[in-house]
Image 1 (cartoon, rainbow, N blue to C red):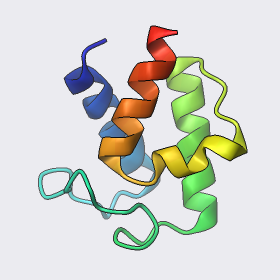
Image 2: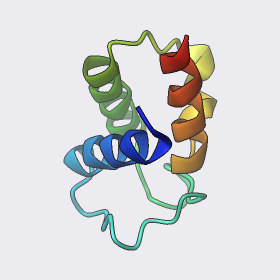
Image 3: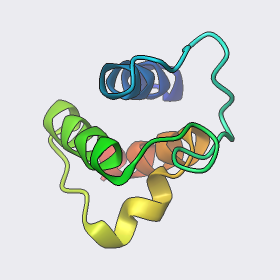
Length: 82
């Protein structure tokens, strides 16, 4: 998967969890909780959706790697590359 594919999939899962987020104006460095207002349950639902989509374990210790879209794309890219 290319970084663009990973980003598109991440944004699809993010907006399914938080439909009020506009994918067209989403900045890659916007913090999921601080800037976008995801609460802890929304964030856990996002992690679950990403786990289901990519088939990757995402341990709680790695949650900071999903704090922004840019960080999440890098993290998922590394994890998928194995």
